[in-house]
Amino acid sequence: MPNHPTPSPADAPLALTPIGTFHADAKYAYDVPRQAVLADSNRGVITLRPDGNFQDALRDLDGFSHIWVLFWFHRNQHWRPVVRPPCHRNRKVGVFASRAPYRPNPIGLSCVELVAIKGLDIIIARHDLLDGTPILDIKPYLPYADAFPDADPGWTRDDDNARFTVRFADNAHQQLCWLEMNGLTCLRPFILNHLSYEPLNPRRHRLEAVCDDSAILAYRTWRAFYHCDPQQRSITVLNVFSAYNNDEISDSQDKYRDKALHRRYTQAQPGAGPASK
Image 1 (cartoon, rainbow, N blue to C red):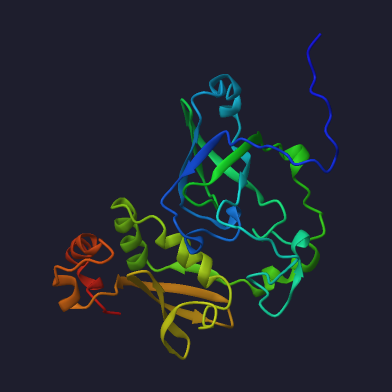
Image 2 (image 1 turned 45 degrees about the vertical axis):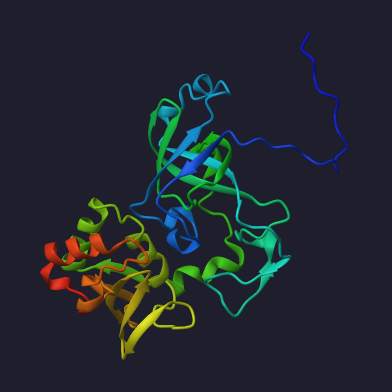
């Protein structure tokens, strides 16, 4: 007969041990979308602990296209009973009616795309996790059990009406592809995330040179110039360029250790020189 642990009182503290850690380029909250499904091109790797007999636990998981990932919001130290949703800045809702990370028990749940499994490394795409996130559990996504197309979205039902469609002009797409091939993978998701809602609101985004229906979105030492069509609720990203001017990009001081990439970029993309639009 198997030995079953003695049940603990319902209010007793729980002990959780992460099964692994998530690794990706996303280091800051603004690097990831507010929901995994809103991600586009980002990827990351869940590396399971080698001492947990998890090789056998992964058996048959590779047949699924999507998985549920339970994780720990490791950067959140406090919880809030009421939160202000990012897409509804003038409204507050209870934290249990939101996906906010400020929870009594900071447990997160995301449905992500399963790309491949290599040993104890699980490669995923379209995620909303930060680098270093502790992973608590993994489960397969089952369409027949997990999808409810007729579910009531509650207070979020107006989200689609507020959302802008973001597209990239051919020039901007090529620029981002070059940056992604050279290691800067967070910029495209950042642009998609920030320009989908209130794209011309400087209180919500780091915007520069807002003029009529055009503006420049700032991301660290990079800038994206875009045009907004309020009637069609669409955004067209036209150009991605360096925030450094010619003198700065040539200066040997490199506080953010990224000037080598900026120099290569401006040489490879002549139309996106320093501080140009």
